[in-house]
Amino acid sequence: MTPMAQALIEAGKAAARGEVPVGAVVTDAAGAVLAAFGNEVEARKDATAHAEMLALRAAALRLGGKFLPGCTLTVTLEPCPLCAAAASLFRIERLVFGAYDPKSGGVEHGPRVFEQTTCHHRPDVVGGVAERESAELLTNFFKTRRDPANSAGR
Amino acid sequence: MTPMAQALIEAGKAAARGEVPVGAVVTDAAGAVLAAFGNEVEARKDATAHAEMLALRAAALRLGGKFLPGCTLTVTLEPCPLCAAAASLFRIERLVFGAYDPKSGGVEHGPRVFEQTTCHHRPDVVGGVAERESAELLTNFFKTRRDPANSAGR
Image 1 (cartoon, each protein chain N blue to C red):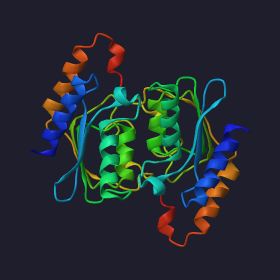
Image 2: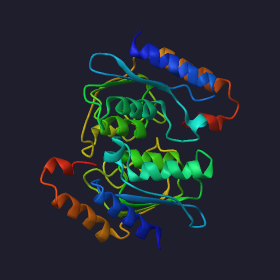
Image 3: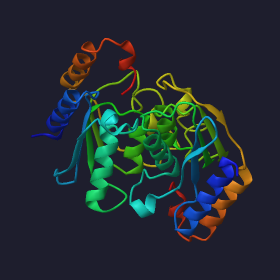
């Protein structure tokens, strides 16, 4: 299974738990999966418990260091500024993401975290991988919610 | 004691532990301290274990919700993009910070997280409070380190 396929599964599991469906996987230089998480904002009552944050922290814990050199972060949605900044701080080598997020994204939109001179580590970025599947999970999730306020962020 | 005085104490304790000296305090609407942390990047081997992240998460855990309405985050250094984004996600009402950080800051420098249309909650911001004391802690800390690489981020 590709990391994106696994991230999509994590996103689907998040939706089933009532979480905004975003999934993230961290793989090492050899492609081995170090951590895979879905969004857990509701379960943990933590506004920063985004899939990427959980996967990055768990992967670092597993490797036993504070950085993730040579690792790839694969996520179904363009990371927000929080998660983009975290990927940089953990020195992720490569970021692969699915759907673009013009509303809350921090990589290709808004603050464009990696493009700033204050960004001291820039991963290689590939966006739009499995874009349709990633976006559909989100669209279907918000379609079933009647409160439009639910669509603002996670 | 003011929240900034307490944040400075946390920053000093962080320095004594070999951590980059940054301290953060979250207070509720009545001014009661909900959480106070220094930087724990080295201790936790977690590149995102910034004082602000730890204080915000602990405060939310204490209040039992995923947001921190009416709360103030007081921190000795201008938050980086990660921590600025976290403050927004937690819906912090007010951010008070000490020293400005032209090299890695995300509020008044670089991505200026709160000024983006992708930012859905903007706290009131007051910078430069106890600026000299906050900056001196950092300057003294890095003066004792011989490796210039140590001065890049936390």
